[in-house]
Figure (cartoon, rainbow, N blue to C red):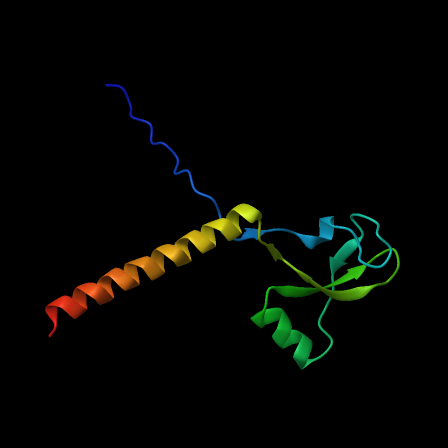
Length: 103
């Protein structure tokens, strides 16, 4: 009996996680010099936990700041717009159906 192989779902991730440590420093422009930094106060701790921005420090020039750990691609923006348009269309259709049957 031949085993059936499942095909992997072909989907596009809406948000893509990335590691900013491999990107270039905003101050000196060198690549692979960023590392995660500890938070200094409650406000930075809140920003770290509540947002997609995390504190980083450059080993080369000492720059310290927040960088995003998630990025959007053009394809993902297009997919979000498509899903939003589809949701609006379905909502409008449901509204019209309810208007006809509930009088």
